[in-house]
Image 1: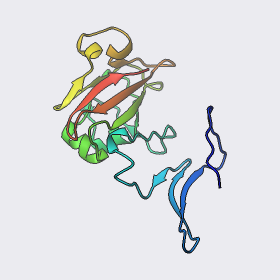
Image 2 (image 1 turned 180 degrees about the vertical axis):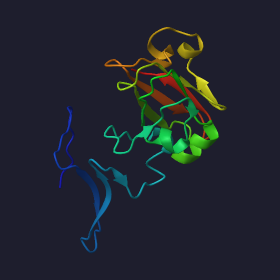
Image 3 (image 1 turned 90 degrees about the vertical axis):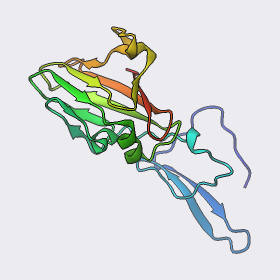
Length: 178
């Protein structure tokens, strides 16, 4: 079959599969399936580098609830979606780079988008970083908006999206992206 090149988006309602066909037997092997539950079974080290591999799942079938000031576990952050319904001001401290990196299997270039949903809360949620977590330049400068805003208000505007970008297996930079 011929190769096809597309200049626009390619869409499917039922996902995509990357396959190889054995030239001797004709047996089809599914190498990767891309859909609502993305899985990759084989990656050739000569064609893919882990630092350029990014998967995002915005469906968040599992979420974590943190309703009081606490340090989030690596497993809670790894869900990508934290909710808070607290009536009191809450500070959520992220886990250390070492713990979060281990939970994610992180390498340099690994990213994770973290949503903090405070729409059902009655007070502000503040995000803080722990050891081996570094605030982005805007956040470190204390910018009141954009990438520097580390608080999530309560109510209808109370959703923040943050990006965790690993510079190594044990260190990350934390920034707000929405």
